[in-house]
Length: 119
Ligand SMILES: [Zn+2]
Image 1 (cartoon, rainbow, N blue to C red):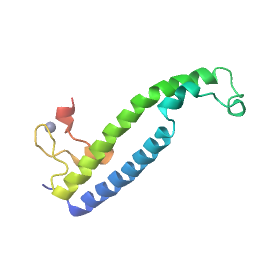
Image 2: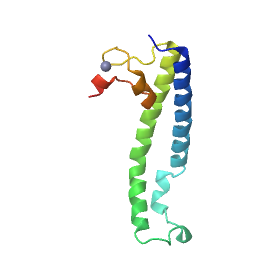
Image 3: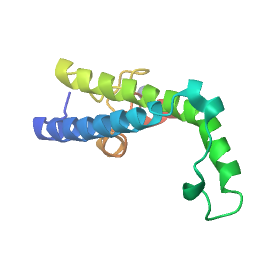
Image 4: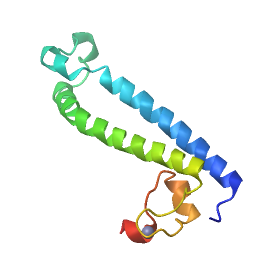
């Protein structure tokens, strides 16, 4: 383990702000209760600007749950990464067990795999 404490603290900070962002996004999504979707009528004043905007809105609603589960997946990765920092095994590839290079961790703090295994 060659990652220094300063770097780990930086990564912890990045992960924590990423986590907060994810939680905010998930909260804003869950306010759109899927069970209410059938009764969902776009309010006229918000949707008068462009033609075809309502159609786009429907597509976005359908994609919503996929995006939500993707966010939940990332959230799990972020939580795991934070746990790994606690446990002292952060930055180790889950597949081959080698250290993940710093550049990759900076770009993707919750990376589970090294560049090689990612391929
Ligand atoms: Zn690997």
